[in-house]
Image 1 (cartoon, rainbow, N blue to C red):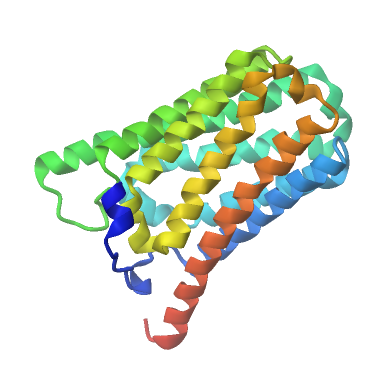
Image 2: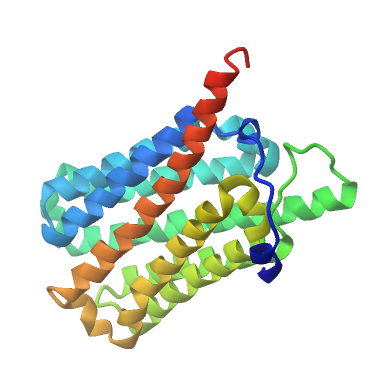
Length: 282
């Protein structure tokens, strides 16, 4: 990891960015809308506008990434891609009932539903990461040379990310079972993203070739912020119910990574568009 920060890195040509301009732009739009929804819910919790932004953002992001399925299938296989897409739409489903009826915010059963959906979505993403681990091992065994089928993350990076997603998922399932917010739930929601951040950092050298140093570091910072959002509640679970600090941390600070990731993807989209305008015949 330290070596990746010290030596110069050749950023790959934009034509090696396999995601389409539509996928990238749609992802940016979805992330920005979701981030705005969180910011609005910080100041106006339980109202229709924030959850509408959240639902629309999640849906746009799910549709955008779904258009990249044909490329992902070469790396993750049918099961991996199916789990990825299902996870995205489960995320959409977590917000949809509240957009249809904001009174559900205060209904216990719907709060259970919300946390279960987030737990399920993260569990599905963890499954995808573990599938990627298995495929990477199989590719190395048979000497796979097709660049479109290769998984560039190292085994160690994938293991950290997969484990982090699984732990993050368990944290949300535990929150669904204990809506009062036990320290155990918050601890898992702190440890999970922290492991993901470590995994992404381990992958820094290759990530910089696609994103540049700024983009790669923004990605690491984003996941780290998600981890830090839960740390105050690990120290003092009652803080989550503080009318001021609870929402400021859980919604306000939690929204920042959405904008940071959107900024990174936006920069990649601009590189992609520049290439398409330079080489229209491609």
